[in-house]
Image (cartoon, rainbow, N blue to C red):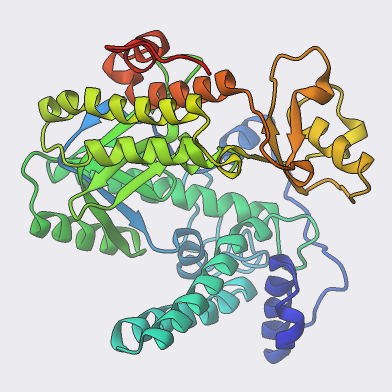
Length: 444
């Protein structure tokens, strides 16, 4: 595919083009349309086979001495090293092959390398080369260029797994997609067992990453474990970092139930990592993001559980500062805008949700609005009886615009509750600290 077309093509088109190029280069006939149907399965076989990656539920609350490790390009590497492709899984030429899919027992071809692994080999080698060049060069501009290139290849590799099971992929097959998931589950389970043999406690695991904990763990111990795990599984296992501390958060609806990808923590080098909280969400107003991130920064200096808990009142004081600015109106409207993506045409929404109201306002003003577009709006009066008066689209704002301070205050308090609910701070307790405190805040 020419560069100018590739720059505008979808990831699926790029992947398909690479596979067609590999087939053409190797003198392999290219099917006009997809022709590899899923093999027949009984109800029980389908139940065993049709599953995703393996997950270890996170252990709620505060943890120290936690190391995060993850597999490099796990799914592409499994497809490459296990020779997984539509024509290699359940091939008729190698019914007694030594390579077997875990749990399912599918045979994998030993006589020829599949189209998909051949294609991935090129991508993986190129990405590793760019990453190597990044480390070698001292030229900042070159390093940035290499980083962008390896990042582009990374996203192509990320999609290759999903494309393997795509109904219109010419070299795809559902059984091959299922096989990758089975190998991934097996790899994570083996790595978790190995971690326990090395004296680690598994506190969380999700598909291709593990969070392992061991009091006083040293870099040497982690390096030895990663080296042994990489050899065992056949996929490189790298250290993302060691946390100074990390907090795994519960569900908002069921406080006793952990959520798979909802946590925040600070690495030993001071880097903050957070997932599933307001500061990471694209639809969170900038004000809320700033407040939550600043609270985490106050906590980041803690080196023990006791120290962390002692810092919570100081973090809530930061939240109070933002609440004061909000209620004084000493804030830019730009920091209060909410961004939401439209899932359908504005007229197709059954309820007057905020993004639908804002989209209808834009339509009435002559703007083009379509599904998939992101609309930005200000919450003016969340509980107004007239839906049109509840929000105002960002493009229609003019001059000094009033906003629903009470609604934004609730959003600030909820951001605090997200961080501290596992430490006994529910919404009302946070409200007591932030709104009342030594002196009650007054809504202007």
